Image 1 (cartoon, one colour):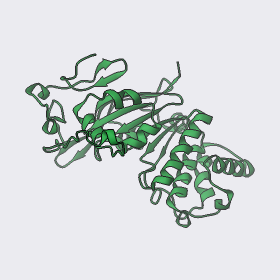
Image 2 (cartoon, helix red, strand yellow; image 1 turned 60 degrees about the horizontal axis):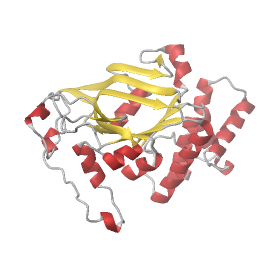
Image 3 (cartoon, one colour; image 1 turned 120 degrees about the vertical axis):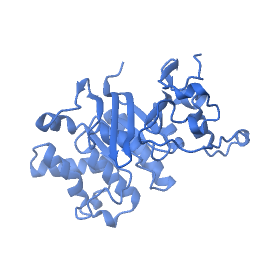
Image 4 (cartoon, one colour; image 1 turned 180 degrees about the horizontal axis):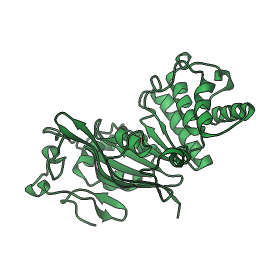
Length: 317
């Protein structure tokens, strides 16, 4: 059994607005083991990025708990949290805005090391160079500035910055969505290679189901702040059960002749308001199978071994 690296229990993140309370992340429970990747998918605005930022505490949670290696880190402050923080890092979506344009590549990678560890100048330079090498960045970019690089190499700099502190867990927030397909494959293979060599665990946030299928061990589907389905990669793609997951997977492009005539599920109706949401299934207004019972709260239920669905119409088996 692999060690559990990251766990959340009843995690919530709400934002106050003039109209009321925005439920961005609502009662999310996850478990990620060492060397594994949890893919998180869903439409834009479903709470994926907010969940990632809350886990690494760029946002403070409204309620719930976050555990790192069994230790509750939800309310740790100061030095106690700083010792944990180096193990929890994040790669951001946009390599054009997430890097400081006034800093060179070496300065960007070295910056977290200056705060996290006490190192000599030589050790600092050696660490920067070894991290660049691990992330596929040639030494000729050592003194290069971000605006002098293409998107793929900028994203490698973001990866190197996250890896500089030798973290055990990284939130990857759509790290390849702004890149072309060839560069996407390079970055994904780099992430998987680093996972094999260093045992790092990922939460990989994306709206691209082909990407998440390639990199993930387990997949979690979110809709308006809630988890509607969770399963292993194989189970989710072969035995997806929630109506929203079915619609998502039906939209995956395919070149396979035997799948071209499959049914494409087009969702109708209005998206529920995430501000002060009503009890019951938030997908109900768009669900083709909705009944009156959908007005009741829909808790995640285990419908097959390690396969959870938040829908009363899905039976066990």
